[in-house]
Length: 387
Image (cartoon, rainbow, N blue to C red; front, side):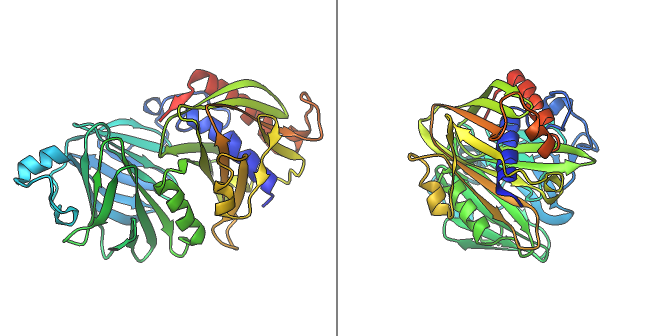
C-alpha cells in the first residue's frame, strides 16, 4: 500500500464523516434517521453489514459482529437509580454490580453504518457497523453503570486499565475514556463505572488481529490522545464511511476545492492537539492506485511521517505527523493515524504536488478523488459539527 494514498484517503474520509455519519460516493447528504439502506429489519432491531443486535425493553440483546455472538445482553442504568433499586450505597464494589436493571431504550437513528440508541436517562449507545464492531456508551450528565453479559463460551479478563474478552472467533477490548473504571464482575461478565461525560469504548478483532498496533491504539483512546476513529469501506460498488468520536467535538468547514486540491478548516474547542485513527478496509483500498505525487499539508506545511506511536504522539504540540499500520502482512487493510499538533482552527489541504490548483492529475491517478472532494465540500457545508 502506498502511504500517500492512505493519507489522502484518511483526510478525505475524516472530513466527510465528521459531518455526516454515513455516506456513499455520489450520494446526497442525509441524516441517519433518513437513511434506510439495509439497516433495519423491524422496529427494535439493527442489521448491518457487520453488526447486528436487538434493542427491546431495557437492554441490547444478541450483539453480533460478523455474525459471531459477542454479548447476550448490554444494560445501562444511572448509578443513583441502581443504588436505590438494589438498596446499596455509593461505595459498592464495581465487581459486585450484577443483574443490572437497565433503563428503557429507544432507537434514535439507524443508517447503513451506525445505530444510535438513547436511554430514559442521560446515557446513549452507539453501535458502529464496522469490521471492529465498535460499541460506545456515553454517560451524558449522570454517572452510569454498564453491564455486558458475554455470549457463549466467551471469557473476560482484566488487563490493567482495560478488559479483554476472548471467544473462539474474536477478541475484544474495553477501555474507559474520562473518569471511570471497567472490570470483570462476580459472574464473569463485564461491568463499567462511568462518571458524567465519560465513555466506555469496545473494539473487537477477528482471531489473531489484536496485535501490538491494536493495543497501542487502545491506549491512545483510553488516555484521550485519539479522539476520533474513522472507518471507510466499499459496499456494492459505493464508498461508505463512519466516525466514532471518543472526545471533544470537532468542526470542519471546507474553504475551497478543485479536482486535484481540497482545502478545509478543522476546529476544536480545546487548544490541545489530537490523533485521528482512520481504518481503511481492504475492499476500499483495492480501488486506489499509486499516488506518489500526493501531499498533505496543515497550515501550508507538509505533515511529517512518524515511525512509531511515541513519535506520532510527539507531534502533538510540535508538528503535524502521520503513520500507517497494517493488521498483518497478508492484509491489505490499513490504519492511518494523523496527529494534529494544536487547535483551535487549522487549515488542512490535500493536493497533487506536481500540478496547479486547477489541474486534473490527481483525479486521474486516484479514481474518485475529484468526486470525493466535491462530495466532502457539499456535506461539510450542510452539516459541520458532531460529538
